[in-house]
Length: 322
Ligand code: AMP
Ligand code: MG
Image 1: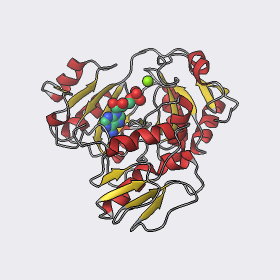
Image 2 (image 1 turned 45 degrees about the vertical axis):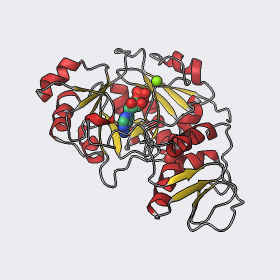
Image 3 (image 1 turned 30 degrees about the vertical axis):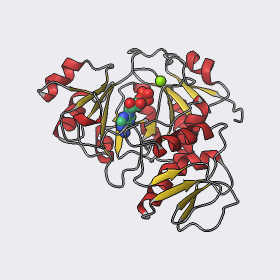
Image 4 (image 1 turned 180 degrees about the horizontal axis):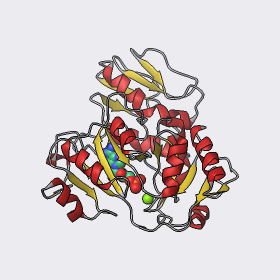
């Protein structure tokens, strides 16, 4: 990937305004939350979200948490049941992430949701995060601001040690104070499920919902399919296909597309892996909805973002119980 100059921004009015401008332009900005430093990008822009994966060197797409400034903005992005609404009112702003069904037409991109029908939402309380999210004026996807496999950063210096030259800016808001990640609770209609322990303790959550949190023991605990760990199409998939077979839809990549498919969508006609990542889940869904029994996928190079794209395609192609 290209080397960027990573700007260190002070957490003052000018720094916040610049960070908001960068995020709205699809750039990457690391910023403090009350848990750890997050690596932020416009969650509504698949290309910007793809850049997070490229900067972190993450070999797989998993759903990212979309951060917003206010409870009202979060409520518009998802479908909140009674438990989710009570938890939002009790703990936001704060270190709680709620996974809820995505709202129809919700703005969070499908790459940020890893193609799932659910969305992870959080309203952080850190004043710098609050100001930045207000300046960005849109949901900001933000996993921890470290290289894949490294520990989560709690200072701007930690962020730079991992990501200097790979991101556009880091807002320096001093050391973060919780240091552990947000608690993640899924509210998908059945009993709320604790997906990850974190900054808000279990008993505080149980006191609000008035019952014990279910353990995340797999998909069976809630509505089937609602908490699938990855997106899987109904159609069978065939990877590294050089030409479509009879009746196959084709997920193409690059300028040279073999003829003969009933339905063709190209992840990136120019062979750009960031564009391909941004289009991945949307194109898969559209081909799946076209009624084809099988989707043939052209070869994707395995360098850079190609590794994460290939990983997700392989999971989508795997037998359903894998
Ligand atoms: P983090 O590593 O702090 O960015 O948290 C990301 C984690 O949030 C993911 O690995 C998931 O466990 C969880 N998460 C976010 N969005 C969703 C979602 N839509 N469905 C299920 N889990 C989610
Ligand atoms: Mg992390």
